[in-house]
Image (tube, rainbow, N blue to C red; front, side):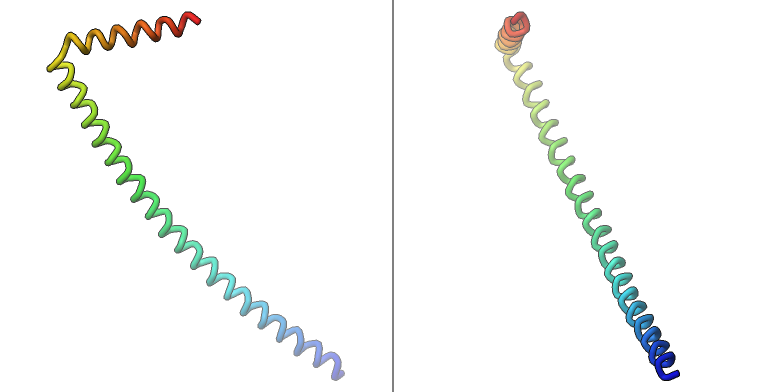
Length: 93
């Protein structure tokens, strides 16, 4: 009889310990999910700002090329012809 009561008490203690551990694990999972959400937002913000920087650099480079073509059309034409000739030679091999 005493053994049965002791086993019942042990089961209750184990159940309480398991539920406490489960609650702790659930809390840790919730913290990790919140951390992942914050990291996702941070990475998204970095990606957006990087895209803006790259886009502005590409626009600046395109504008410089346009100005160069307007200022020196003959030298630009010669440069393009030279590069095309080199690509033609390389593609034959």
